[in-house]
Each structure stands twice: as C-alpha cells, then as structure tokens.
Image 1 (tube, rainbow, N blue to C red):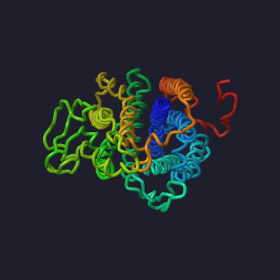
Image 2 (cartoon, one colour; image 1 turned 30 degrees about the vertical axis):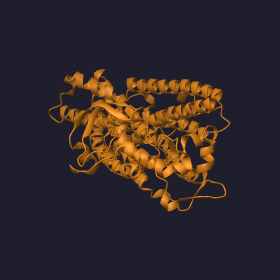
Image 3 (tube, one colour; image 1 turned 60 degrees about the vertical axis):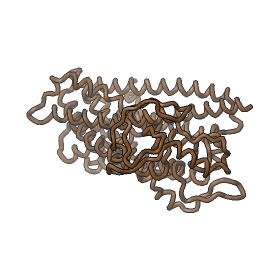
Length: 480
C-alpha cells in the first residue's frame, strides 16, 4: 500500500507538472502577443500607415492560435484539481475558489468578448475605436493573470486565512489580504514582463525567418524593429522585476533562495556567487564549484556584505518548527540540482535575449541597415523564437519545485493533497493520453504558425472582417 501511494504521488506530480508546463507555454505568449498587437494597431491609428494595420492583422492570427491552445490546456487543469488533488481542493477550496471564479466570470469573460469583437469588426468601427478592443483584450488577459497568481501566491505565502477547527480546512478571513499578498505583487510584474519578452522574441524570430526567405521584405523588417524595441525594454524590465521577486523570496522562502544559489552551508559576512557547481544531494554538500567572491551578497542585498543562510541550517529550523505537526521524518530539502540549474537557464536566458535585442537594433538602425547581410544574426534571431518558452518553464520550475515539500507553504504537504481514490493505472493512462494530445496540439500550433508566416501578410484571410458583408461562418471562410 505504501509503495502504491508513492507511485500515485509521483505520477500525480508528473502529470500536473506536464500539463502546467505546457499550459504555461501558451498563456504568457498570448498575454504578450495581445500587447504587441495592440502596439502595432496603435501605430496604425497614429501614423495612418496601412503596413501597421497588416501587422496587427497578421500577428493577430498567431495571437489567436496561442489563445485557443491556452484555453484548452487550462480546462484540463481545472479537472485535475478535483480528480487528482481532491484533498487539496477540500482543504483550499474556500480560498482557492474565489480568485479562480473571479478570473473566469470577470477577466476571462472580458477577454473573450473583446477578442471576438476585435476579430470581426475591422471595417465596422473607425480605427481609433477599433484599437480599443485589442487593448481591452490585453487588459482582460492581464487581469486573468492577476487572479490566477493571487491563488498561487497564497500557496507560496499564505495570508488572510484561519484554520477552521471543526473541519481542519483553511477559511478566508480577509479578501483584502489575499489580493494584497506581497508575493502576488512581486511575481506579477515578473510574469507580465516575461510574457511581453516572449511575444516580442517570437515576432523578431519569425520576421528573421521571413527575411531569410526574402519574403515581404518591408513588412518583416518593420515587424522586426518593433519586436526588437519591445524585447529590449521587456528584457530590462524582466531582470529588474526578477530582482524584486528575489527580495521577497529571501524573506518568505529562504530554502528556495538557498537552493537557487546552491548554498548548503551558511556563508560568511560576504557571500560568493556560485557560477556552476556539482552537488551530492544524499550528503547535502557541494562537491565542486566555481565561485565569484562577494557577488551573491551584491545580488541578494545590493551591497558587498551580507550572509546567506544555507540549506542545512534552514532544514534544522524547519524541523524544529513543524515536527509536531508533520513528523520528524519530513525532508525539507528542495530538488537542488533542478532549481539551481533552472535559475541559471532563466537568468542567462534573459541576458541572452537582451543581447540579441541590442545586436538586432544595432544592425537595423536607420541609414546603417545591414542585417540582411548578417545571415548568421538572422539565424540566431530565428532560433531564439523557441528559447523564451524554455526560459519561462525554467522560472516555473523554480517557483513550484522550490516550494517542496509544501503544496500550501507551511500548511499542507504535497503528499497530503493527493486524491485518496486515484489509482496508478488511471494516472498512467491519462499521462499517456495527455502527452500524446499535447504533442499533437503543439505540432498543430507550430504547423499553422509556419503556414501563416509562409503565406505572409497579403493572404486574403488576414483581415478577418475585410468587408462589411464578410460572414465568418460562410463556406468561403472555411475554404469551401
């Protein structure tokens, strides 16, 4: 029975990780694409240049694809909470349900309504009016992110709650405390700036592939310039926002912070930063490392002095605090290797995209435009299309795995949240089905995005509502 319980727990964790990572591929992308498309259409309204209208319509197609896939993958997660994590749902329902309900009934409803109005009314409203529909869509998508992150932030740092002594479950005591959770307002800017950086990088990458194909030169060149400027500012913003979030993690989850930096033993007054390292997770020690003196103190406290508490002493403190409630056999060490390297992938990725933005802007500057002669750079920018999805996933792994062993920090462990009636066989079956389905959806998304790029901005369907009499449900709209 114990082995079966361990198997069910591992499979449930794997399934939730898989579905969440895949969902997180598309949600930040769609949020960021809404912003990029809104910028392009705003430029059309201001400059009265039809090229910018074509941009909004062309890149809007890819935005719609990402939105559709994001919705479908999100629905799967709703079922998972009730079916695989029923103990968690019972324990957290009073708090977790409120922001999710608001997200669905208010933010997602707003986003869905205006995305439809935006799609089919290009010639039914003046440009200055029509542009508001995409901005309202973007605002709705960002509001959705706020409410989802409000629920997640409670799991990271519980606020505004009390334990119902009769049921043993959490109950909300202050909705204001839930939505003013310091975790929420540190993580939200990081997620949003990362979303914008993702979308801008994809625009730049697809435009680079378009230029490599010598396809719609002026269109892709202007699209690239807009994407490069947005990615430049977004890369800077995501680094600054990440620093603010780190300051909060140091306060609320010091074990997570110590793991991201591979610190097992307490440092001295001046903490070195570990560039790379290898770890013995059984003995809880660092085997070898390359370190830069004082840099970790500088990153953590913005000064050259300041000690960092190591995982070993933090583990002892957590045992002293929680052994009465959760038992002395608990393991409070997080997956160090995964968290350590994920942080370097995420942070290094942001630096890489900042560098490529600077290079792209340099070689496309006015009167010195030589990027078409730099095929190596076009290939680099094109390959970078796929990288922000990896960097976003690395950030998600830090956020969620760095909370181990907690499902709700300090209140419920991962093992306690799993459904007692779910079997390993059921999880194996759904894991395989989800993996195959997600692979197919990802392939379809890439296939149609590539098809849109090849057809270019002059494709007949680019304008959705190109004429006042256009019927989106006509036979012609489906190619028949």
